[in-house]
Every structure is written in structure tokens, then in C-alpha cells.
Length: 339
Image (cartoon, rainbow, N blue to C red):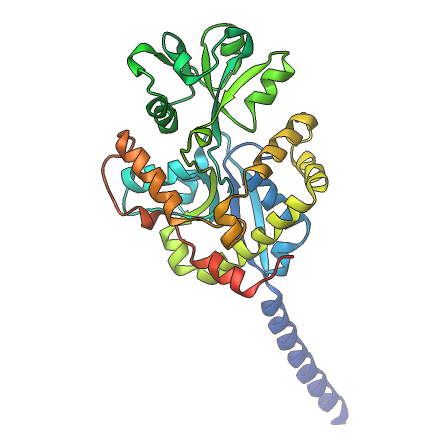
């Protein structure tokens, strides 16, 4: 008569051992959940594509990360980073320095990897306008998006252009202000509007600050200083996955483009192809040849910092080295081979 209770007790014991084992296995297999927000709508900006492919190819999963990818609509990605709703996002190197110098010092941001080894902006005029050099900008109207870019001012300095003879106007983001004759020279993103203007049937002349020996920098991955300090392991794994993805995207641009179109099904495929090709081209430079893709050089940041400070684009001087860190990429490249 005691057999049934004994068997029942044995069953309960085995069940509890199994349950504990399953709980432990579940805990071991739980990925760290993080949120990455791209700084604009879905498109072929290289830092966006790298995140798409890291998720698509399982590179995040390989690092035990469960990554949710979001997209900003009106620049809210930086604010969401500040309040902790986003772990990692994108920003231009110039914006990182400006925010580090000008914004609330209690929530500083830090660049973790650099995807644009050259300036992301260039300047265009219609070929038919006979504006052939920056010196020809004198007496013309220059259109900028939101604020006058410091590398535009650097181009003026490099070519002895009298800024007082240029009419500078804020025009926003529609490149048709150039084709409609509202401006003579227009600030553009190299991977975007030049292709749009050509598709509209206009030949253009294009200038970049890099052409005049003025080093530029493009988009970066950023986090808050608190994330960098308190989530080192997660940050290292996030960057390991995305740098692996960066190499993959560069080697497989057509496959990457297919994934872009899944995120942006209504986008023009040829335009997205132009965008990705342009940004892949600008992802390499002297620094990456020495230290690997995504790497940043102290001299790059100092040059940009000096330029912004000289043109009064910063509230004042500060330690520019606090705006970026190579800590993670140096460790990653020491311990990981991507090819």
C-alpha cells in the first residue's frame, strides 16, 4: 500500500530536478535584449545596412544578442538614447562633438565606430551654370539644409573665397531648389541628392572638402557614456557583430541591397544601390588600412574639432578625446579575424 506514494514521491523528485535543469538552460540561452535605432527612415545608409545584415545573418545571435531595430522619423533617436529607451544609435561625427560640447554634460554621448572615413556632405552646382570652382561661388546664392556646414567654410578658406559675397540661405532638404534656380550652389549628402539630381536629368559639378585636403568624417555608432562604462561586455558584443557585418556587406553588396529592400520596400532600388555603393566607397581610408574597418584616429577627431572650434560651431573648447573611444574595436581586432 506504500508503493504508490513512493512512486509519486520519486516522480515529483525527478520532475523538480528536470524543471530546475530547464530553468537553468533557459537562463543560459536567454539573449541580452538591446535596442538599436537608425537615425532616419529605412534606407541604404551603411550603418543602417550593417545592423540589418547583422540581424539577418545571425551575427547578433552569435553574440547572444536579441536586437530590436527601430527607425527615427524626426530626429528623436538622440533624445530616446538620452532617456535610455535606445541603447545604440547613429550620429554624424560633427554632431557628436557639438553635443559633447554644447549639450547637458550629465548625459554625454560617445562614438564607438566610424563608418564614413570622409565627409558625408558635398556641394553641387548645375553644370550649365558655369560655376566651375569654389571661387565662382562669389556673387551666387548658396543653399544649406539646417545650418551652415563648417567644412563649407573650410572650402571657402582653402580657396580664398570672400564669404561676404555669397548669399547664404536655409533651404531644407529638397534638391529641386537647385534645378528651379532658387540657389546656385547646394549642400547635399554625397550618397543621396547627386543621384537624385542626375535622375531628374541634370548634370552637376560636385565639390567635397576632402578634395582640398580638409579631412572629413561621416556617420558613427554612438552610446551614452553610462552605457559605455556600465555595459562593456554587451557593447563589445554589439560591435563584434556589427563589424563582422560591415565586412560582410562590403563583400556582398547585392545581397545587402536585397535586405535593404525588405526594410524599405517602397524605395527606389537604383537609388538605394547608389547610396550603398557611395557609402561603402567612403568607409575605407588610411586609418582603416592600419587599424581595421570602423576604426577612428585621434587626428581625425582633432582636425574636425579644431575646424568646428575655429568656425565657432562649438560653445567652447573641451577635451575632444572624450567624444570617442577605440577601446572596444582595438580589443575586437586583437581577438577576432573577419576574413
